[in-house]
Image 1 (cartoon, rainbow, N blue to C red):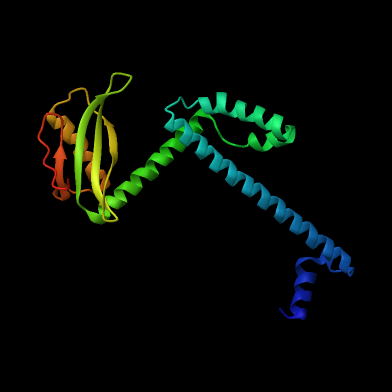
Image 2 (image 1 turned 180 degrees about the vertical axis):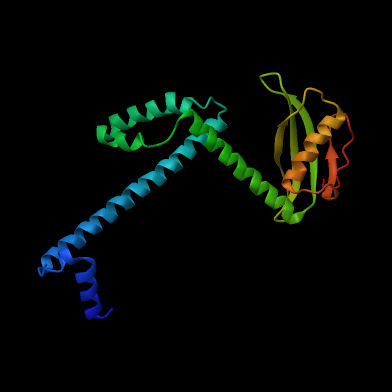
Length: 210
């Protein structure tokens, strides 16, 4: 920008600074602004690390099939004591910024489940053909759950994975099982015409992908 335009901008937009001719003043302001940017960037990085740590703890809780409250009531206090003994009191302040509440861990696990579901769905849709294995089970609360496993092609290899686990209604007739499964396949955008085989309890397996 031309010096004349810069001067006009200074006198019209920042008249309180137009009389300052000392170069050191502007250097101090520039240094102050750089320190602020550095401070914000550091806090942003700490926040990112805190979120990553939160998801890591949530994954551990999910894999060990523990109560979500264990992160806040057991894992966090244990980490605080370890950090205090190994690195001192100052290091605990950053540790306390990690979100580990019961609701937060629950949301983290749901986020990871959604991501896994999305990845599996995209891989199946890419190659279209798939086979299903369906089984009924009962959880610890006595509710009936429909477990659905899927076999599909991924990178020229046959892969098996859990497709979904859905609660069944009070009645568990064949129509009820079909309705739950059909509703989920429609949600995923999967077409029955691409299902090359299905295996259920007490029924013969007709899987052309095996």
